[in-house]
Length: 61
Image (tube, rainbow, N blue to C red; front, side, top):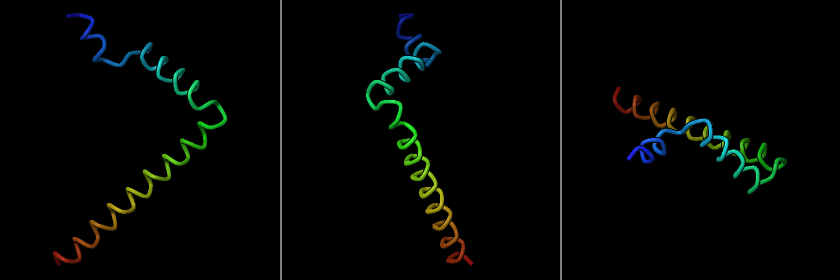
């Protein structure tokens, strides 16, 4: 029962394990490129939601 409780809460060792697995899968040189792509995707998503909110506000006026 307690093992399931500790697995549900991400701790230091869980984060370290995830980082090591990501480094092994993608390599150190590929990670900045992946993060840049992720950041660009998040920025595009935010811009699209802001644009959608503006259109919605214009229709409500």
